[in-house]
Length: 268
Image 1: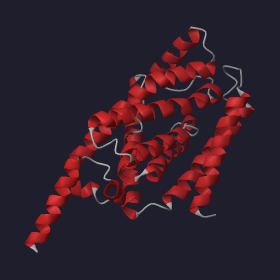
Image 2: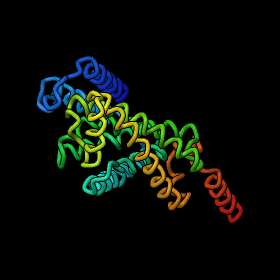
Image 3: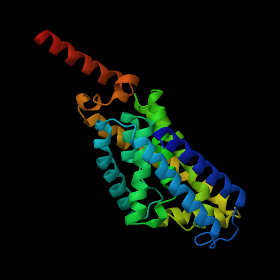
Image 4: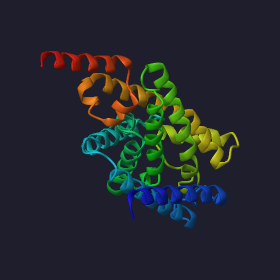
């Protein structure tokens, strides 16, 4: 099966799993963790994410593949630091967003999904179904970078808000029906419990929690990713074809690159 078919089948499986979870709506607040619907959802999300990753990685140039381990490490380390802090945030997508911006949607999706699969298989099994959310975050970051939203900080903040809304909506059924709203840090659980205390059902509470916390989390994530990119030399970022082809970074960075190229030509 070639990479396009793997990505297509993986995307289709994720969509069917998402739609099935919404349609089934397990009603038990605690039965989701071990119930048959939750197990099927876990399997569907995990297999779908791994198919997407396997197809995406085969299409990536060597420069991008070399960046993936560093970005995945940043995601895992920052995510665990924030998790143990008890804040209602995550900050576990900095590397995913960074790769999406410099290498494109497929690379961003592969980075996010791989990070969650690694965490799920080694540290926290509950991270596995969220590999889909991580893949969507990386994909969305890459698409917004292609549209030029990461050239300036104000539009990058807007991109963070968009990524946060998308992540919150995608994660809500997983949080509600797979984990019975019992996943996440202490801070996230407290926000979920507050929304449920006001009479909201599991899915609505999870969606509201995502729409409150995820946009803030992803705006901070984007700002940190932009700070890292700003600290890198323009020559490094322009090794990536996606940056060159779509001019995803600031005009100033392109000006610096052009000036350096002119200097080299004159010197020759």
